[in-house]
Length: 418
Ligand code: AMP
Image (tube, rainbow, N blue to C red; front, side, top):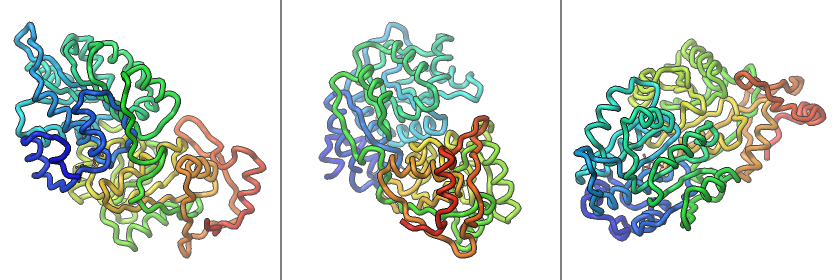
């Protein structure tokens, strides 16, 4: 299938050609023609599948073909609203919209918290067709009467599962109540849960369900590997892997902000250019770190799940789970940073005995037994016992959910391969 066959207009085809996209990705082929008919869509697709273009291209086409409803004031009213959980993702979506829409005369802007609101307010007051926003700041600006949502024609909820995980559901519901009842709705989510189903029932009218990867599966272009290692030797192994394999651009995940800071400092001491991004860092610091990483000035970017949400670096070759996430869906999201849009990638997890329960949960979710690979010199010491895992403020018995299991695990030969 070609982009031409999807029914996109000439202005969009030109912009796509400039991006050198030769063919639509599976989600794009399936979703674009349906959105163009005006129907609601529930899209099961993770980041990296090309879903931003899958909703942005038909959105731009619909907005450019349908005339805006006459607005009473001179200001243009918002015609499409895209909600997304993080600032980084919001910025990236808006950048994509600007790229795809460069030959159309539509305008867009981005609204997110953590920075001063004045510029965002000024932009909104000049009038804009499309707003990409994180929920909290959008509500703030709405309450200050800086944005008019009464003429929204297309409402898009991106990464809906993540919105729920991050506790944005109330804000999202408030925003849903502010947009007009008659509108087109699109919801995208990488994972499925009863909460997502409930949200779809509330938001979508007779939606078309489109799924590109199997439920809760990981992108097949990503090679997944586990290196079993002792908890105290993970950092050493990480430095060894980056150095010996000469990796140039590595995204490393940790469970906690403190862990991210500590690890990046240790990596610097090991001679690797590294920095950390997490929720305690200012937006300016996060953007600076991301730009330096993209430019190749930083070799190892250490991130927490929340901060890494939405990072889009083309062909990111390596993603390392320094800690396994305690929420199994986060594993799917994390490794979605590599192997993007068909490019191969490698997702490596350094797993110590404390994390066996987390690993079991992940493998159950993705229905795949991730291959184990021991690294010579870093084999786990079978005498080391599982300890509870610190999760920021809370503590989880990641490797000790049942004492008898912990006992069994510690006796297991560490080199077990599946
Ligand atoms: P997304 O899933 O929206 O985060 O997109 C992932 C990456 O794929 C982005 O870097 C896009 O620029 C890229 N991309 C989107 N559509 C295509 C396509 N049809 N062909 C090649 N790359 C694409």
